[in-house]
Length: 620
Image (cartoon, rainbow, N blue to C red; front, side, top):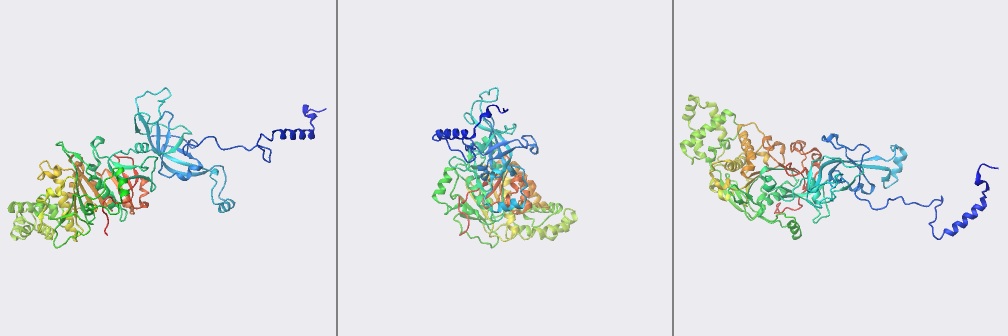
Protein backbone atom coordinates (compact mmCIF):
# COMPACT_ATOMS: atom_id res chain seq x y z
CA UNK A 1 0.00 0.00 0.00
CA UNK A 2 1.36 3.43 -0.86
CA UNK A 3 0.33 7.08 -0.89
CA UNK A 4 1.83 7.66 -4.36
CA UNK A 5 -1.37 6.72 -6.12
CA UNK A 6 -0.84 5.87 -9.81
CA UNK A 7 2.96 6.04 -9.44
CA UNK A 8 2.84 2.80 -7.34
CA UNK A 9 2.71 0.77 -10.54
CA UNK A 10 5.77 2.47 -12.11
CA UNK A 11 8.32 0.11 -13.71
CA UNK A 12 11.65 1.79 -14.51
CA UNK A 13 12.63 -0.73 -17.22
CA UNK A 14 9.26 -0.54 -18.91
CA UNK A 15 9.45 3.25 -18.88
CA UNK A 16 12.80 3.20 -20.56
CA UNK A 17 11.54 0.86 -23.28
CA UNK A 18 8.51 3.02 -23.85
CA UNK A 19 10.63 6.15 -24.08
CA UNK A 20 12.97 4.51 -26.54
CA UNK A 21 10.05 3.46 -28.74
CA UNK A 22 8.60 6.94 -28.60
CA UNK A 23 11.95 8.52 -29.47
CA UNK A 24 12.41 6.22 -32.38
CA UNK A 25 8.98 7.03 -33.77
CA UNK A 26 9.56 10.79 -33.66
CA UNK A 27 13.24 11.03 -34.51
CA UNK A 28 12.50 11.61 -38.16
CA UNK A 29 10.43 14.76 -37.53
CA UNK A 30 11.82 16.51 -34.43
CA UNK A 31 15.05 18.43 -33.63
CA UNK A 32 17.49 16.50 -31.42
CA UNK A 33 17.79 17.59 -27.83
CA UNK A 34 21.02 18.72 -26.20
CA UNK A 35 22.89 16.72 -23.60
CA UNK A 36 20.77 18.10 -20.79
CA UNK A 37 17.60 16.80 -22.33
CA UNK A 38 16.24 20.30 -23.26
CA UNK A 39 15.62 21.59 -26.76
CA UNK A 40 17.74 24.68 -27.72
CA UNK A 41 15.79 27.95 -27.78
CA UNK A 42 16.34 31.05 -29.94
CA UNK A 43 16.88 33.99 -27.53
CA UNK A 44 17.03 36.67 -30.25
CA UNK A 45 13.80 38.69 -30.59
CA UNK A 46 11.82 38.33 -33.77
CA UNK A 47 11.97 41.10 -36.41
CA UNK A 48 14.60 43.79 -37.04
CA UNK A 49 15.79 46.49 -34.65
CA UNK A 50 14.72 50.04 -35.47
CA UNK A 51 16.79 52.94 -34.14
CA UNK A 52 19.70 52.83 -31.73
CA UNK A 53 17.93 52.40 -28.39
CA UNK A 54 15.06 53.58 -26.23
CA UNK A 55 14.16 56.30 -23.75
CA UNK A 56 14.65 54.93 -20.23
CA UNK A 57 13.10 56.02 -16.94
CA UNK A 58 15.25 54.23 -14.36
CA UNK A 59 16.81 57.52 -13.29
CA UNK A 60 13.84 59.72 -14.08
CA UNK A 61 12.22 61.12 -17.20
CA UNK A 62 11.50 64.81 -16.93
CA UNK A 63 11.25 67.86 -19.21
CA UNK A 64 11.42 71.18 -17.34
CA UNK A 65 11.80 74.87 -18.13
CA UNK A 66 15.02 74.85 -16.11
CA UNK A 67 17.65 72.89 -18.02
CA UNK A 68 19.22 71.68 -14.78
CA UNK A 69 15.95 70.00 -13.80
CA UNK A 70 15.52 68.19 -17.11
CA UNK A 71 16.29 64.46 -17.02
CA UNK A 72 16.31 62.73 -20.40
CA UNK A 73 18.32 59.55 -20.92
CA UNK A 74 18.37 56.75 -23.46
CA UNK A 75 19.63 53.18 -23.35
CA UNK A 76 21.78 52.41 -26.40
CA UNK A 77 21.83 48.81 -27.63
CA UNK A 78 25.16 47.02 -27.89
CA UNK A 79 25.33 47.01 -31.69
CA UNK A 80 24.97 50.79 -31.91
CA UNK A 81 27.32 51.92 -29.16
CA UNK A 82 30.41 52.47 -31.30
CA UNK A 83 28.56 54.82 -33.66
CA UNK A 84 27.25 57.41 -31.18
CA UNK A 85 29.20 60.52 -30.22
CA UNK A 86 28.74 63.41 -27.85
CA UNK A 87 27.06 66.13 -29.89
CA UNK A 88 25.25 63.71 -32.21
CA UNK A 89 21.65 64.57 -33.04
CA UNK A 90 18.82 62.13 -32.26
CA UNK A 91 15.04 62.10 -32.75
CA UNK A 92 12.35 60.49 -30.62
CA UNK A 93 8.78 60.31 -32.01
CA UNK A 94 5.64 61.10 -30.04
CA UNK A 95 2.54 58.93 -30.61
CA UNK A 96 0.71 61.74 -32.43
CA UNK A 97 3.34 62.27 -35.13
CA UNK A 98 5.36 65.05 -33.51
CA UNK A 99 9.06 64.47 -32.90
CA UNK A 100 11.51 65.44 -30.18
CA UNK A 101 14.81 66.63 -31.64
CA UNK A 102 17.67 66.30 -29.17
CA UNK A 103 21.44 66.23 -28.82
CA UNK A 104 23.71 63.85 -26.94
CA UNK A 105 25.47 65.67 -24.09
CA UNK A 106 26.94 62.71 -22.22
CA UNK A 107 27.75 59.00 -22.61
CA UNK A 108 28.37 56.51 -19.83
CA UNK A 109 28.73 52.84 -19.07
CA UNK A 110 27.05 51.37 -16.00
CA UNK A 111 27.16 47.83 -14.62
CA UNK A 112 24.38 45.58 -15.78
CA UNK A 113 24.80 43.41 -12.68
CA UNK A 114 26.23 44.44 -9.33
CA UNK A 115 29.85 43.35 -9.15
CA UNK A 116 33.16 44.73 -8.00
CA UNK A 117 35.38 44.81 -11.08
CA UNK A 118 38.24 46.60 -9.29
CA UNK A 119 39.89 43.31 -8.45
CA UNK A 120 42.95 41.36 -9.53
CA UNK A 121 40.95 38.60 -11.18
CA UNK A 122 38.81 40.99 -13.22
CA UNK A 123 41.82 43.00 -14.32
CA UNK A 124 43.89 39.98 -15.37
CA UNK A 125 40.94 38.41 -17.15
CA UNK A 126 40.48 41.62 -19.15
CA UNK A 127 44.19 41.72 -19.96
CA UNK A 128 43.83 38.33 -21.66
CA UNK A 129 40.88 39.37 -23.83
CA UNK A 130 40.70 41.52 -26.95
CA UNK A 131 37.15 42.74 -26.48
CA UNK A 132 34.52 43.68 -23.94
CA UNK A 133 31.33 41.75 -23.45
CA UNK A 134 28.86 44.59 -24.05
CA UNK A 135 26.04 42.49 -22.57
CA UNK A 136 27.62 42.92 -19.13
CA UNK A 137 27.12 46.68 -19.21
CA UNK A 138 24.50 49.32 -19.73
CA UNK A 139 25.37 52.13 -22.14
CA UNK A 140 23.36 55.27 -21.46
CA UNK A 141 23.25 58.57 -23.34
CA UNK A 142 22.25 61.82 -21.63
CA UNK A 143 20.16 63.96 -23.97
CA UNK A 144 19.49 67.66 -24.26
CA UNK A 145 16.09 68.43 -25.78
CA UNK A 146 16.51 71.04 -28.53
CA UNK A 147 13.04 71.42 -30.05
CA UNK A 148 9.77 69.70 -30.87
CA UNK A 149 9.22 69.22 -34.60
CA UNK A 150 5.66 69.29 -35.87
CA UNK A 151 3.62 69.58 -39.02
CA UNK A 152 2.00 72.92 -39.77
CA UNK A 153 -1.31 71.25 -40.63
CA UNK A 154 -4.88 72.45 -40.15
CA UNK A 155 -6.26 68.91 -39.88
CA UNK A 156 -8.02 68.43 -36.50
CA UNK A 157 -6.58 65.86 -34.15
CA UNK A 158 -8.49 62.98 -32.60
CA UNK A 159 -9.32 62.75 -28.92
CA UNK A 160 -6.04 60.96 -28.17
CA UNK A 161 -4.08 63.72 -29.92
CA UNK A 162 -3.40 61.77 -33.09
CA UNK A 163 -3.93 63.33 -36.50
CA UNK A 164 -3.52 60.07 -38.39
CA UNK A 165 -0.69 61.62 -40.41
CA UNK A 166 2.96 60.63 -40.41
CA UNK A 167 5.54 63.44 -40.19
CA UNK A 168 5.65 65.64 -43.30
CA UNK A 169 2.72 63.88 -44.98
CA UNK A 170 1.13 67.28 -45.40
CA UNK A 171 2.37 70.76 -44.62
CA UNK A 172 5.66 72.32 -43.65
CA UNK A 173 7.85 70.97 -40.87
CA UNK A 174 8.29 73.52 -38.07
CA UNK A 175 9.87 73.70 -34.64
CA UNK A 176 8.88 74.99 -31.22
CA UNK A 177 10.43 74.94 -27.78
CA UNK A 178 10.36 71.61 -25.98
CA UNK A 179 7.06 71.51 -24.10
CA UNK A 180 6.27 67.83 -23.71
CA UNK A 181 7.93 64.68 -22.42
CA UNK A 182 8.43 61.60 -24.61
CA UNK A 183 6.88 58.27 -23.63
CA UNK A 184 8.98 55.69 -21.77
CA UNK A 185 10.54 53.09 -24.06
CA UNK A 186 10.23 55.43 -27.06
CA UNK A 187 12.60 54.24 -29.75
CA UNK A 188 15.28 56.81 -30.59
CA UNK A 189 17.19 57.01 -33.85
CA UNK A 190 19.98 59.09 -35.22
CA UNK A 191 18.74 62.13 -37.13
CA UNK A 192 19.54 61.43 -40.78
CA UNK A 193 16.97 63.51 -42.61
CA UNK A 194 18.18 66.88 -43.91
CA UNK A 195 14.86 68.63 -43.34
CA UNK A 196 14.56 67.30 -39.80
CA UNK A 197 18.07 68.41 -38.90
CA UNK A 198 17.81 71.85 -40.47
CA UNK A 199 14.43 72.44 -38.83
CA UNK A 200 15.63 71.13 -35.48
CA UNK A 201 18.65 73.44 -35.51
CA UNK A 202 16.73 76.38 -37.02
CA UNK A 203 19.09 76.43 -40.01
CA UNK A 204 17.87 78.34 -43.09
CA UNK A 205 17.56 76.54 -46.41
CA UNK A 206 19.05 79.39 -48.43
CA UNK A 207 21.62 82.10 -47.90
CA UNK A 208 25.38 82.64 -47.77
CA UNK A 209 27.29 79.35 -47.59
CA UNK A 210 29.70 78.92 -44.65
CA UNK A 211 30.43 75.18 -44.50
CA UNK A 212 28.96 71.76 -43.71
CA UNK A 213 27.40 70.66 -40.43
CA UNK A 214 29.66 68.44 -38.35
CA UNK A 215 29.95 66.73 -34.98
CA UNK A 216 33.35 66.16 -33.39
CA UNK A 217 35.20 66.98 -36.61
CA UNK A 218 33.17 64.60 -38.79
CA UNK A 219 30.56 65.79 -41.26
CA UNK A 220 26.96 64.87 -40.46
CA UNK A 221 25.73 62.59 -43.24
CA UNK A 222 22.21 61.79 -44.39
CA UNK A 223 20.57 59.53 -46.93
CA UNK A 224 20.07 62.47 -49.31
CA UNK A 225 22.19 63.60 -52.26
CA UNK A 226 24.53 65.24 -51.47
CA UNK A 227 24.76 63.47 -48.11
CA UNK A 228 26.24 66.49 -46.30
CA UNK A 229 24.20 69.32 -44.76
CA UNK A 230 25.07 72.82 -45.90
CA UNK A 231 25.04 75.68 -43.40
CA UNK A 232 24.00 79.11 -44.64
CA UNK A 233 23.45 82.60 -43.23
CA UNK A 234 20.12 84.33 -43.86
CA UNK A 235 20.50 86.79 -46.67
CA UNK A 236 17.09 88.16 -47.63
CA UNK A 237 14.58 90.49 -46.08
CA UNK A 238 11.77 87.92 -46.11
CA UNK A 239 13.52 86.03 -43.30
CA UNK A 240 14.45 89.26 -41.46
CA UNK A 241 17.43 91.49 -42.08
CA UNK A 242 20.29 89.94 -44.06
CA UNK A 243 22.86 88.92 -41.46
CA UNK A 244 25.68 90.49 -43.45
CA UNK A 245 24.35 93.83 -42.17
CA UNK A 246 24.18 92.50 -38.61
CA UNK A 247 27.98 92.09 -38.70
CA UNK A 248 30.36 89.13 -38.59
CA UNK A 249 33.47 88.26 -36.62
CA UNK A 250 35.91 85.56 -37.77
CA UNK A 251 38.31 84.60 -34.98
CA UNK A 252 41.14 82.09 -35.26
CA UNK A 253 44.77 81.63 -34.37
CA UNK A 254 47.70 81.42 -36.75
CA UNK A 255 47.34 78.37 -39.01
CA UNK A 256 43.67 77.82 -38.15
CA UNK A 257 42.48 78.65 -41.68
CA UNK A 258 40.74 81.93 -40.87
CA UNK A 259 41.94 83.75 -44.02
CA UNK A 260 40.95 80.74 -46.13
CA UNK A 261 37.50 80.77 -44.48
CA UNK A 262 37.15 84.55 -44.77
CA UNK A 263 37.94 84.48 -48.50
CA UNK A 264 35.35 81.76 -49.08
CA UNK A 265 32.66 83.77 -47.29
CA UNK A 266 33.51 87.08 -48.97
CA UNK A 267 33.41 85.33 -52.36
CA UNK A 268 29.77 84.42 -51.70
CA UNK A 269 28.88 88.08 -51.14
CA UNK A 270 30.39 88.85 -54.55
CA UNK A 271 28.29 86.29 -56.42
CA UNK A 272 26.41 87.71 -59.39
CA UNK A 273 23.02 86.82 -57.90
CA UNK A 274 23.74 88.57 -54.59
CA UNK A 275 21.60 91.72 -54.73
CA UNK A 276 20.01 93.87 -52.02
CA UNK A 277 17.03 96.24 -52.34
CA UNK A 278 17.65 99.93 -51.71
CA UNK A 279 15.20 102.54 -50.49
CA UNK A 280 14.79 103.98 -54.00
CA UNK A 281 13.56 100.61 -55.31
CA UNK A 282 16.80 99.51 -57.00
CA UNK A 283 18.49 96.19 -56.29
CA UNK A 284 22.26 96.54 -56.07
CA UNK A 285 25.15 94.14 -55.56
CA UNK A 286 27.32 94.88 -52.53
CA UNK A 287 30.71 96.53 -52.72
CA UNK A 288 33.35 94.83 -50.57
CA UNK A 289 36.23 96.91 -49.20
CA UNK A 290 38.83 94.72 -47.49
CA UNK A 291 41.73 96.10 -45.45
CA UNK A 292 44.59 93.67 -45.89
CA UNK A 293 47.66 93.94 -43.61
CA UNK A 294 49.20 90.69 -44.93
CA UNK A 295 48.52 91.31 -48.65
CA UNK A 296 46.45 88.14 -49.20
CA UNK A 297 43.04 89.24 -50.46
CA UNK A 298 44.00 90.73 -53.84
CA UNK A 299 44.52 87.09 -54.86
CA UNK A 300 40.74 86.76 -54.93
CA UNK A 301 40.98 88.22 -58.44
CA UNK A 302 42.47 84.90 -59.62
CA UNK A 303 41.09 81.38 -59.93
CA UNK A 304 42.46 78.71 -57.64
CA UNK A 305 44.63 76.42 -59.82
CA UNK A 306 44.13 73.58 -57.30
CA UNK A 307 40.34 73.63 -57.69
CA UNK A 308 39.68 70.80 -60.14
CA UNK A 309 36.64 70.30 -62.38
CA UNK A 310 35.07 67.63 -60.17
CA UNK A 311 35.25 69.83 -57.07
CA UNK A 312 33.87 72.77 -59.06
CA UNK A 313 30.87 70.66 -60.10
CA UNK A 314 30.23 69.78 -56.46
CA UNK A 315 30.25 73.48 -55.58
CA UNK A 316 27.85 74.28 -58.40
CA UNK A 317 25.45 71.53 -57.28
CA UNK A 318 25.39 73.04 -53.81
CA UNK A 319 25.04 76.61 -55.06
CA UNK A 320 28.47 77.78 -53.83
CA UNK A 321 30.08 80.62 -55.81
CA UNK A 322 33.66 79.94 -56.87
CA UNK A 323 36.35 81.31 -59.16
CA UNK A 324 38.23 84.58 -59.18
CA UNK A 325 36.44 87.94 -58.93
CA UNK A 326 37.22 89.79 -62.14
CA UNK A 327 36.24 93.14 -60.64
CA UNK A 328 39.03 93.22 -58.05
CA UNK A 329 41.22 96.29 -57.59
CA UNK A 330 44.09 96.79 -55.16
CA UNK A 331 44.12 100.38 -53.88
CA UNK A 332 47.71 100.85 -52.74
CA UNK A 333 48.42 103.68 -50.27
CA UNK A 334 51.39 105.84 -51.21
CA UNK A 335 53.42 106.14 -48.02
CA UNK A 336 56.86 107.73 -48.28
CA UNK A 337 59.31 105.63 -50.29
CA UNK A 338 57.56 102.30 -49.57
CA UNK A 339 57.10 100.25 -52.74
CA UNK A 340 54.42 97.65 -53.39
CA UNK A 341 55.01 94.40 -55.29
CA UNK A 342 52.01 92.81 -57.03
CA UNK A 343 53.76 89.72 -58.35
CA UNK A 344 51.49 87.30 -56.47
CA UNK A 345 48.21 88.41 -58.08
CA UNK A 346 46.86 89.83 -61.33
CA UNK A 347 44.45 92.42 -59.92
CA UNK A 348 44.65 96.02 -61.14
CA UNK A 349 46.60 98.32 -58.81
CA UNK A 350 45.68 101.97 -58.17
CA UNK A 351 47.94 104.19 -56.06
CA UNK A 352 46.36 106.86 -53.84
CA UNK A 353 47.16 109.22 -50.97
CA UNK A 354 45.26 110.53 -47.94
CA UNK A 355 44.63 114.27 -48.31
CA UNK A 356 45.26 116.24 -45.13
CA UNK A 357 41.89 117.93 -45.64
CA UNK A 358 40.26 114.77 -44.24
CA UNK A 359 41.64 115.73 -40.81
CA UNK A 360 39.40 118.79 -40.62
CA UNK A 361 36.46 116.64 -39.51
CA UNK A 362 38.63 113.84 -38.11
CA UNK A 363 41.27 115.43 -35.85
CA UNK A 364 42.21 112.07 -34.34
CA UNK A 365 43.83 111.02 -37.65
CA UNK A 366 46.76 113.32 -37.01
CA UNK A 367 47.14 112.67 -33.29
CA UNK A 368 50.16 110.40 -33.22
CA UNK A 369 50.10 109.67 -29.49
CA UNK A 370 47.63 109.50 -26.66
CA UNK A 371 45.90 112.82 -26.10
CA UNK A 372 43.86 113.71 -23.07
CA UNK A 373 40.58 115.59 -23.41
CA UNK A 374 42.24 118.98 -22.94
CA UNK A 375 44.88 118.31 -25.60
CA UNK A 376 42.33 116.90 -28.03
CA UNK A 377 40.20 120.01 -27.64
CA UNK A 378 43.26 122.15 -28.38
CA UNK A 379 44.04 120.09 -31.50
CA UNK A 380 40.48 120.49 -32.75
CA UNK A 381 40.66 124.25 -32.26
CA UNK A 382 44.03 124.53 -34.03
CA UNK A 383 42.81 122.50 -37.03
CA UNK A 384 39.64 124.59 -37.33
CA UNK A 385 41.65 127.80 -37.23
CA UNK A 386 44.18 126.49 -39.75
CA UNK A 387 41.56 125.39 -42.30
CA UNK A 388 39.63 128.63 -41.81
CA UNK A 389 42.75 130.53 -42.87
CA UNK A 390 44.06 128.09 -45.50
CA UNK A 391 40.80 126.74 -46.89
CA UNK A 392 40.02 123.08 -47.66
CA UNK A 393 43.21 122.81 -49.70
CA UNK A 394 45.34 123.25 -46.59
CA UNK A 395 48.20 120.75 -46.54
CA UNK A 396 50.04 118.88 -43.81
CA UNK A 397 53.20 120.86 -44.54
CA UNK A 398 51.21 124.08 -44.18
CA UNK A 399 49.80 122.92 -40.83
CA UNK A 400 53.29 122.22 -39.51
CA UNK A 401 54.39 125.71 -40.52
CA UNK A 402 51.24 127.07 -38.88
CA UNK A 403 52.17 125.40 -35.57
CA UNK A 404 55.78 126.60 -35.80
CA UNK A 405 54.64 130.22 -35.49
CA UNK A 406 55.78 131.41 -32.00
CA UNK A 407 53.41 134.37 -32.17
CA UNK A 408 50.44 132.03 -32.41
CA UNK A 409 51.64 130.05 -29.41
CA UNK A 410 52.05 133.22 -27.34
CA UNK A 411 48.68 134.63 -28.45
CA UNK A 412 46.75 131.51 -27.48
CA UNK A 413 48.55 131.21 -24.14
CA UNK A 414 47.93 134.85 -23.17
CA UNK A 415 44.28 134.66 -24.18
CA UNK A 416 43.84 131.51 -22.09
CA UNK A 417 42.60 129.59 -25.11
CA UNK A 418 45.44 127.05 -25.23
CA UNK A 419 48.05 126.80 -22.51
CA UNK A 420 51.62 126.80 -23.82
CA UNK A 421 52.33 123.34 -22.34
CA UNK A 422 49.22 121.96 -24.04
CA UNK A 423 50.25 123.67 -27.28
CA UNK A 424 53.68 122.06 -27.14
CA UNK A 425 52.19 118.61 -26.40
CA UNK A 426 49.86 118.85 -29.39
CA UNK A 427 52.69 120.01 -31.64
CA UNK A 428 54.83 117.03 -30.65
CA UNK A 429 51.97 114.57 -31.29
CA UNK A 430 51.07 115.78 -34.78
CA UNK A 431 54.60 115.83 -36.15
CA UNK A 432 55.85 112.72 -37.95
CA UNK A 433 53.14 112.22 -40.61
CA UNK A 434 55.18 113.59 -43.54
CA UNK A 435 55.02 110.20 -45.30
CA UNK A 436 51.26 109.75 -44.87
CA UNK A 437 49.41 112.85 -46.05
CA UNK A 438 49.52 114.61 -49.43
CA UNK A 439 51.87 112.19 -51.21
CA UNK A 440 52.57 112.14 -54.94
CA UNK A 441 49.40 110.26 -55.94
CA UNK A 442 45.71 110.99 -56.53
CA UNK A 443 43.76 111.76 -53.35
CA UNK A 444 41.31 109.03 -52.37
CA UNK A 445 38.54 111.64 -52.32
CA UNK A 446 38.90 111.91 -56.12
CA UNK A 447 38.64 108.13 -56.58
CA UNK A 448 35.40 107.31 -54.78
CA UNK A 449 33.65 105.89 -57.88
CA UNK A 450 36.55 103.58 -58.49
CA UNK A 451 36.98 102.76 -54.79
CA UNK A 452 33.35 101.73 -54.14
CA UNK A 453 31.95 99.59 -56.96
CA UNK A 454 28.68 97.60 -56.75
CA UNK A 455 29.59 93.92 -57.06
CA UNK A 456 33.32 94.72 -56.91
CA UNK A 457 36.11 93.93 -54.47
CA UNK A 458 38.48 96.67 -53.32
CA UNK A 459 41.53 95.54 -51.39
CA UNK A 460 43.71 97.97 -49.43
CA UNK A 461 47.08 96.25 -48.79
CA UNK A 462 49.31 97.74 -46.08
CA UNK A 463 51.97 95.02 -45.77
CA UNK A 464 54.47 97.22 -47.62
CA UNK A 465 54.06 99.99 -45.02
CA UNK A 466 56.50 99.38 -42.17
CA UNK A 467 55.38 102.27 -39.96
CA UNK A 468 52.48 101.04 -37.78
CA UNK A 469 51.36 104.61 -37.08
CA UNK A 470 51.11 105.28 -40.82
CA UNK A 471 49.20 102.02 -41.35
CA UNK A 472 46.73 102.94 -38.63
CA UNK A 473 46.22 106.40 -40.12
CA UNK A 474 45.50 104.99 -43.60
CA UNK A 475 43.06 102.31 -42.43
CA UNK A 476 41.17 104.60 -40.06
CA UNK A 477 41.02 107.43 -42.61
CA UNK A 478 39.41 105.21 -45.27
CA UNK A 479 37.09 103.32 -42.93
CA UNK A 480 35.88 106.51 -41.24
CA UNK A 481 35.26 108.09 -44.65
CA UNK A 482 33.06 105.15 -45.66
CA UNK A 483 31.22 105.10 -42.33
CA UNK A 484 30.65 108.86 -42.22
CA UNK A 485 29.20 108.88 -45.73
CA UNK A 486 27.00 105.87 -44.98
CA UNK A 487 25.54 107.43 -41.83
CA UNK A 488 25.21 110.97 -43.19
CA UNK A 489 21.84 112.47 -44.09
CA UNK A 490 23.62 114.83 -46.47
CA UNK A 491 26.49 112.81 -47.94
CA UNK A 492 29.22 114.30 -50.07
CA UNK A 493 29.59 111.08 -52.06
CA UNK A 494 26.26 109.57 -53.10
CA UNK A 495 28.07 106.53 -54.51
CA UNK A 496 28.89 105.34 -50.98
CA UNK A 497 25.46 106.13 -49.59
CA UNK A 498 23.62 104.33 -52.39
CA UNK A 499 25.70 101.14 -52.48
CA UNK A 500 25.39 98.19 -50.06
CA UNK A 501 28.78 97.95 -48.41
CA UNK A 502 30.72 95.17 -46.66
CA UNK A 503 33.63 96.66 -44.73
CA UNK A 504 36.21 93.93 -44.10
CA UNK A 505 39.06 94.44 -41.67
CA UNK A 506 41.77 91.84 -41.04
CA UNK A 507 43.73 92.11 -37.78
CA UNK A 508 40.83 94.19 -36.48
CA UNK A 509 42.25 94.09 -32.96
CA UNK A 510 44.96 96.56 -34.06
CA UNK A 511 42.40 99.23 -34.93
CA UNK A 512 39.39 98.60 -32.67
CA UNK A 513 41.17 97.92 -29.42
CA UNK A 514 39.93 98.96 -26.01
CA UNK A 515 42.10 102.00 -25.12
CA UNK A 516 41.90 104.99 -22.81
CA UNK A 517 43.05 107.71 -25.20
CA UNK A 518 40.50 110.18 -26.50
CA UNK A 519 41.25 109.37 -30.14
CA UNK A 520 40.71 105.64 -29.48
CA UNK A 521 37.34 106.47 -27.91
CA UNK A 522 36.43 108.52 -30.98
CA UNK A 523 37.22 105.58 -33.28
CA UNK A 524 35.29 103.09 -31.15
CA UNK A 525 32.30 105.43 -30.97
CA UNK A 526 32.29 105.78 -34.76
CA UNK A 527 32.43 102.03 -35.39
CA UNK A 528 29.84 101.30 -32.71
CA UNK A 529 27.42 103.76 -34.29
CA UNK A 530 28.11 102.24 -37.69
CA UNK A 531 27.30 98.80 -36.31
CA UNK A 532 24.05 100.01 -34.78
CA UNK A 533 22.93 101.65 -38.03
CA UNK A 534 24.16 98.87 -40.30
CA UNK A 535 20.78 97.28 -40.97
CA UNK A 536 19.21 100.55 -42.00
CA UNK A 537 22.13 101.85 -44.08
CA UNK A 538 23.11 98.51 -45.73
CA UNK A 539 26.52 98.54 -44.04
CA UNK A 540 28.07 95.32 -42.74
CA UNK A 541 31.26 94.96 -40.71
CA UNK A 542 33.32 91.83 -41.44
CA UNK A 543 36.03 91.67 -38.79
CA UNK A 544 38.86 89.12 -38.79
CA UNK A 545 41.19 88.68 -35.82
CA UNK A 546 43.41 86.29 -33.90
CA UNK A 547 42.99 88.31 -30.69
CA UNK A 548 39.24 88.80 -30.20
CA UNK A 549 39.78 89.69 -26.53
CA UNK A 550 41.42 92.95 -27.63
CA UNK A 551 38.41 94.24 -29.59
CA UNK A 552 36.45 96.83 -27.66
CA UNK A 553 33.28 95.50 -25.99
CA UNK A 554 31.13 98.28 -27.47
CA UNK A 555 31.90 96.97 -30.97
CA UNK A 556 31.83 93.31 -29.93
CA UNK A 557 28.28 93.62 -28.58
CA UNK A 558 27.00 94.59 -32.04
CA UNK A 559 28.32 91.39 -33.69
CA UNK A 560 25.53 88.94 -34.52
CA UNK A 561 27.49 86.14 -36.22
CA UNK A 562 30.67 84.80 -34.63
CA UNK A 563 32.77 82.25 -36.53
CA UNK A 564 35.40 80.69 -34.28
CA UNK A 565 38.24 78.53 -35.58
CA UNK A 566 41.06 77.09 -33.49
CA UNK A 567 42.19 79.37 -30.68
CA UNK A 568 44.80 78.38 -28.12
CA UNK A 569 44.58 81.37 -25.78
CA UNK A 570 42.12 80.94 -22.93
CA UNK A 571 41.27 84.65 -22.76
CA UNK A 572 40.58 84.69 -26.50
CA UNK A 573 38.25 81.69 -26.21
CA UNK A 574 36.35 83.22 -23.29
CA UNK A 575 35.92 86.53 -25.12
CA UNK A 576 33.97 85.12 -28.09
CA UNK A 577 31.01 84.19 -25.83
CA UNK A 578 30.05 80.85 -27.35
CA UNK A 579 28.21 78.13 -25.38
CA UNK A 580 30.42 76.23 -22.95
CA UNK A 581 29.88 72.85 -24.64
CA UNK A 582 31.40 74.27 -27.85
CA UNK A 583 33.94 76.45 -26.08
CA UNK A 584 35.72 73.36 -24.75
CA UNK A 585 36.21 72.05 -28.30
CA UNK A 586 37.89 75.15 -29.73
CA UNK A 587 41.50 74.38 -28.70
CA UNK A 588 41.28 70.93 -30.29
CA UNK A 589 39.78 71.87 -33.65
CA UNK A 590 41.77 71.05 -36.75
CA UNK A 591 42.39 73.50 -39.59
CA UNK A 592 39.09 74.43 -41.24
CA UNK A 593 36.88 73.29 -38.34
CA UNK A 594 34.78 76.05 -36.85
CA UNK A 595 32.02 76.88 -34.41
CA UNK A 596 29.29 79.25 -35.56
CA UNK A 597 27.29 81.20 -33.00
CA UNK A 598 24.58 83.25 -34.69
CA UNK A 599 21.45 83.46 -32.50
CA UNK A 600 19.32 85.04 -35.22
CA UNK A 601 20.27 82.32 -37.70
CA UNK A 602 20.41 78.96 -35.93
CA UNK A 603 21.31 77.00 -32.85
CA UNK A 604 25.08 77.04 -32.12
CA UNK A 605 26.71 74.45 -34.39
CA UNK A 606 30.01 72.92 -35.45
CA UNK A 607 31.00 73.19 -39.10
CA UNK A 608 33.74 72.03 -41.42
CA UNK A 609 34.69 74.55 -44.08
CA UNK A 610 35.56 73.74 -47.66
CA UNK A 611 38.90 71.92 -47.98
CA UNK A 612 39.86 74.16 -50.90
CA UNK A 613 39.67 77.91 -51.25
CA UNK A 614 37.20 78.97 -53.94
CA UNK A 615 39.69 81.60 -55.19
CA UNK A 616 43.47 81.68 -55.29
CA UNK A 617 45.05 81.41 -51.84
CA UNK A 618 48.65 81.21 -50.69
CA UNK A 619 51.97 82.22 -52.20
CA UNK A 620 53.80 79.94 -54.64
